[in-house]
Structure formats: structure tokens, C-alpha cells
Length: 357
Ligand SMILES: [Zn+2]
Image (cartoon, rainbow, N blue to C red; front, top):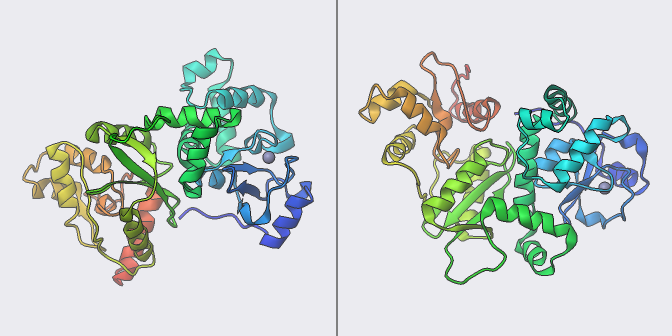
């Protein structure tokens, strides 16, 4: 797992935040649960109630947990050291968070793509594009953790500050503020895990999505789900999420080896075949893509099997992390190799097997 940075004690951080102590700049960030926004310790905005605060060691952690950067203290810009060109870029992103900023586009707007990339990597331990992606997803789903009420409030009140949020939410989810009774819905919820928050999707028949929030594929997967079910996405609760949440907790505590909850697979017949075979790989063991291809009776379709593996929408539960290269190397994982290693290590340790990846 990625290293978590050390943070000062809670009391110290409360004090620093309420005193706007600039010596804590860059040491921690404060998120406000009721607004879904995160700040630098010195933010001049009105200080919220203590019980609504959450602390993070990095801007990345705050973003991954669904918070948006504050417009007053601009935590992403990184305080006093911010270069001038960054102001205009961040302004642009704030106004249009769904802007697709490819290298050519950046250049046209007068930004040097390499400089942009390097700055985000250095300051936020993430690429510029994963920052944009996170921002979009955060804007769309960040408020889920605070319950549906905030979402409804956002729709109903039409506050100026929330209009951007609503707009971007609609773009990603296709969910319109005007809800109709007969519209089919896919419910979306955020499930915390030791590897970072995951987005889960459910319909009455079962879980249809479980994926890391920062995964590149997520937006595409959400679009595919909407098309497959001809349904809209909306944050909400569902009994399936309660089961998923408790089983995933047990899994990460190494108290559960198999999952017992209904899954709904959406994909081509070939993909479904691959995902079914994936579910037969026992906990704490691995198979190669070649072996998987043989098992579905198409021994030459190794590449297609690998692709279908990557298209899995229900991570961990359909254990695509248990497939490795023929040479015994871990090879790729949609959620990142460090997560694959973490999951396999957890399972091997539970089984008392030597971990050699
Ligand atoms: Zn602020």
C-alpha cells in the first residue's frame, strides 16, 4: 500500500486550524463534511464546527475521499510557492471541470504540458489528468458520503455555488434533477477500503459495479452501465451496499475468503465467460492468462482474455487480481499494481503461503 504521510495529533490540528497557523501549511489539509470542501489550515473562510472536520495529509487524499478544493484558500495551488501560470490554469479548471485538456489543447491555451505534468506529480503525487478525473468524480459523487439530503438540497436550492456541481454531476451520471417515478435507477455508493474509496453500483438484482474511485476506466464503466441497463445513476442506499460493506471489511481483515452476495454482470458473452472463470480462482492462489484462456476452451485467445480481465467492473469480488503473467510476474492491474500486490499479499499471508511477487 502507498505510504501514508504522518499527521500531527487531532488536537494540534484543531488548534492550528482555528488559529490559522501558517507553520502548518502543507502539513495537513482540513475537509468539511457538510460542504464537501477542503482547505489549507490558514483558510480565511468562516471556521466550521469541530465535529464536521476531517483531516488529510495530502491534497490527493482529500480529493480521493470526495472533497473539492476551496475557492478561497485554493489548497491545490500549494500556498505561497505557486507559479503564475498555474493561477490561470486552475481558474480555467474551476470554471469548466469537465474540460478535456489534452497536450495539444494545453499548448494552444499557452501552457507547457511537461511543466503542468511535473508540477502536479511533485505537488500532489498524481498526474494532471488523474487530478482532473478525480475532480470530476469528486464533484459528481463526493457528497454521497454525506447522505442523499445534501444532493437533494443541491438540486432544490439552486445555489450559485452548487450549480457547477449539479452541472458536472448531470454530465457524468445523466441524472436529471427532475426525477420521474418510472425511471430505472442504478444506485451508487462510496465504500471505504484500506486501498482507498471504491464506488459501488447496485440494482435490485445485485451489485453491478465495484471499482476504485481513482481508476482511469471508471467514467467509461459508468457510461457502459447506464447503457446496459438503460438506467440513470443516482447516489443512494440499498441493502446490497450494507452486505457489500460488511463483507469487504471482513475481507480486508482477512476474515473472509469468498463473497456471498448477488452480482449482475454486464458485458459481451465472451467477457461474461472470462469473468465466470475468474470467480473459480480460489482465494490465495493465482492463474496465468494462458491458463484462463485454456479453461474457457479458447487457448489462443490469451490477449482477449487479458482484455476482458481488465474490463471487469466488480473488482476484488470477481478476483481479476489473481491473474498473473506466465512468467510469474504480477503484470497490469486497473487499480494499480500496488493494489494488486496488497490484495495478493493479504490472501497469501492468510493462507500461510510465501509471498514472492
Ligand atoms: Zn478554504
